[in-house]
Length: 329
Ligand code: GTR
Image 1 (tube, rainbow, N blue to C red):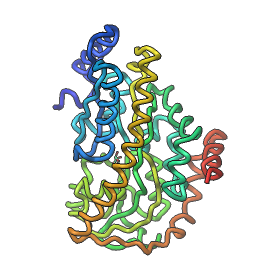
Image 2 (tube, rainbow, N blue to C red; image 1 turned 90 degrees about the horizontal axis):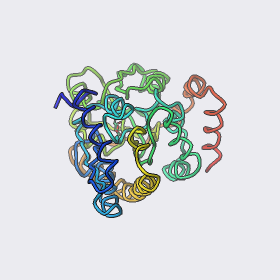
Image 3 (cartoon, protein in one colour; image 1 turned 120 degrees about the vertical axis):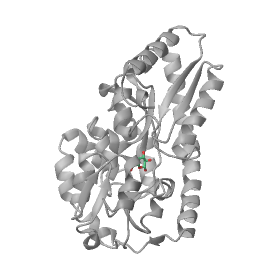
Image 4 (cartoon, rainbow, N blue to C red; image 1 turned 120 degrees about the horizontal axis):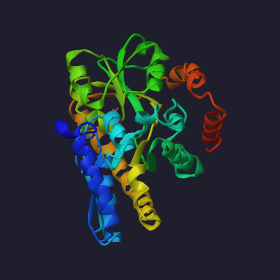
């Protein structure tokens, strides 16, 4: 497995063979797409499999996508590096993993930006979303679609009902400077680490807490280690499906359009799966004894986020996009 975790001769050889097969239109091509989630049924994993079925049908069997979930190809940071250089064709990541690569990805990650899931969907489905998807192209990543990831909340061994409860907690965050600042603005200590290390870190006490949506709290089994999930709902950072621009550019315009359309079609599928998964995961964690704290003083968190906006939303482009989202209710 380690031989494909990082860009390597093997990866380069695979890329060369993918590129070669793209030139022979009758040849069947299987693209690989990475994902960190453990379950084959997790909505993002299922959605890319669905996209593969759509593509296969529309291309008469020429294109399929094989999903390598369970972080089998590496962490989100590692697999994005592979996609950028064309050593891996596709990647489904949380948008936070793109924060250091394409600045516009900061916008949907920002704390308390979206008022509701409907507001998030409406913003990402329109021109604002298109601009953010396009924003990664100069970095070698073609943004194909956004998927839902609900709202992220803090889970710990104790309830976090207001910002004072978060003070001093060691909270795992994604590997993004924005996340370090966001959790820092809560008065907590941010510990960035890849997804795959969080369960052990929670179990050994290396960290006190983490933050995620309920399907991830369940799917990564974090509920086994910390039992109190407080609905702080501090970010609705969506998922993003990206493709290597090096690979995309080798396809014909008709095939490119087919990929874009199949990705968009998988969004509807993913959202339906997402809504079902939120309900399923909630039932699993509560049955296992997790406590869901709903009476959270979200305003106390929101009031502390101005420095995060001041630090990251610094260019006229980013300011325009944030305002466009805020005006898009
Ligand atoms: C999940 C997301 C993953 C990963 C994970 C994390 O919600 O689906 O892609 O980013 O969070 O926090 O590492």
